[in-house]
Image (cartoon, rainbow, N blue to C red; front, top):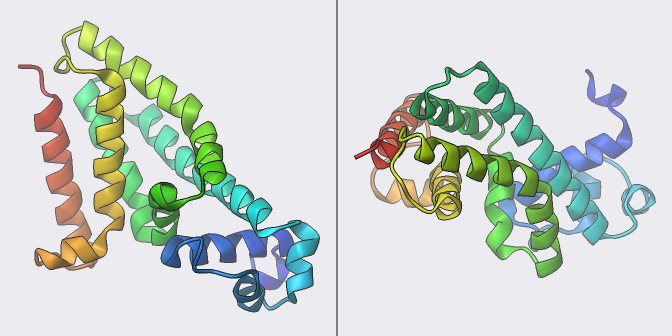
Length: 200
């Protein structure tokens, strides 16, 4: 779809997601978002009553976009739990390649205000609950090692999103952000998660 055919509200959300994800929510003003879209600030405020409203709408977009990719990958994955975790890691890396700001925004959760962090947590809660239940079920069946399923879900989340978004940290150890670098990183991460969860 040509940019002129995309509704203004959606163009604002897209620009805000990219700016927030690349630079952080606090570092971006409504004026900058308006300039990026090519509209006046009043137009942004017509669609979103405040920056807080825009941030919440953008968080909703980011979570929805990420969950679509993840849930599609899990539906297509084989039933083996380690293969499903492989599929999850691969799915999270797809947006990291296609739209790095998406994971950058999810990675902002620790820097968001309490109300925005609570909003994001609320959006993620159903999926997190399903993930914890699935991990517990696989542990009960002996297919992955026994651990606290909630802590394990948090560790997997922070490891995957952290590695997918922290290019500066990875650069310090000689990793380069290139298609081959991302493939190597994804491969190492999949092996790490698989080894961490294999039943003893």
